Length: 80
Image 1 (cartoon, rainbow, N blue to C red):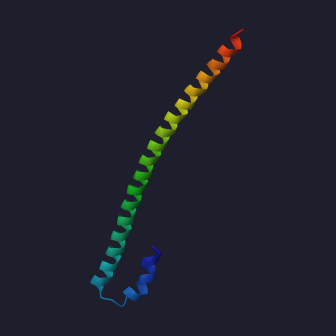
Image 2 (image 1 turned 30 degrees about the horizontal axis):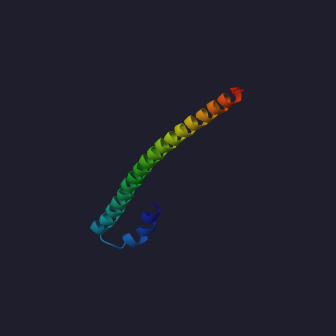
Image 3 (image 1 turned 60 degrees about the horizontal axis):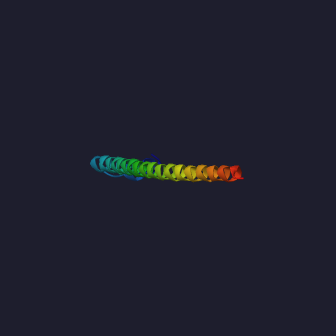
């Protein structure tokens, strides 16, 4: 919005159709940046999901390894 107000003094010299095009063009750029932002956010969210999935898999593997280690220790302690 600041950019439109900074263009107003210059735009007031220009004929009306050009003023309209300036504002229209600015709105279009804004819209494009918004879609890019959502697209990027969507990609980031997808990456986060895959990272979380990988982390959960690794965590479950670590848990399994730890539980088998604990079982081995218990078995060893029970030996005479």
